[in-house]
Amino acid sequence: MREATNPNYRKKAESPKFVRVVIWAVVAVLALSLLGRQNRHSVVSDARTICVNAGETIKVKIQPDQWSGWIIGPRYGRFTIDTPSADWFEIFLCTGKRIRVSAYQWKPLGVLPGDRFRIRGTTGEATIAVFVE
Image (cartoon, rainbow, N blue to C red):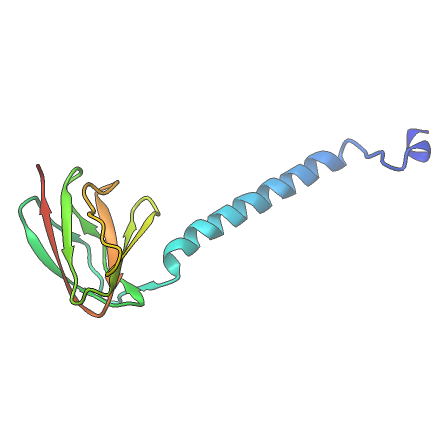
């Protein structure tokens, strides 16, 4: 009787299925957005993970359209990065955050959140030094 008198009446079985579909759609959108953060640029084919200790300096090949391998440093290490030109470089942190530094907008990196990152930028070799205060 309620169905005939109220056009907005829904059966109880319809609501939970609709809610499940909406939840799955939201989860899928979030997962795809997290995957897309780094995947706008591929990783260099010969990328390898580099572990660096405090007081060490390493050289990493970088390219503008590909991320380097993971660079792992001490948990509270400070990093200095010198790139081949003063154009720009970008860092992708393990937290998903990106930091882009251009020639006209220099900012010190200091302690990065997390202990690993990838780098890309103007083609050449970047020099990365790590120290702990």
